[in-house]
Image (tube, helix red, strand yellow):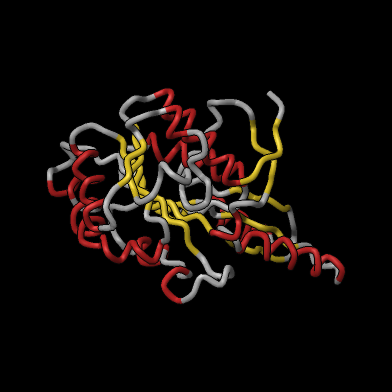
Length: 255
């Protein structure tokens, strides 16, 4: 199947549609999801296609996170929408003391297939409480996986993998990248496994390790370095935890 050019927002919506069509246990909950298809239009077409599975909630992030944890424990595969990553602080107990630890506390007898979707990042004049990048907090929380895609194809492939994973996944997506377009495979089974980085520019002189919006800054930097005869290799980490140290080490040894 040929690739299509589409925005990261459209790629996310397509990936969610494919997964929700495949698995009836998947649903999305958060604030103001049905009226505007999500704050960034990322759920376009989903409320109409899956009535009753896109759930508007009260303005209570701790309640939203708690509902997600409880639903995951009963065999559902919830996706929690936090609107802005800054608001995740209101649900820290449910995420860090419950979701992250439950599988360990029950000796591996239960699964917790929960995706927490967090738009993050500055650059849109969204002020202090809507502009933070908080992924580092959760990298240091045992029991949580952390994903930060850059290109549109990464958004779709990693979201599908996160939904199918049996552990809680924090999915951070930079707000400035929602409208950025890229090539996205048409294959409905296109998935990018969690914990797998990608070498997106070959080089021999220096390794640039990056993720999320930083990937595009590294592309610009690599072009400037090339003018000086320096060939930079760009490694897009994509998943911060688990971290693909084999790809990282391979690039560093090479350069």
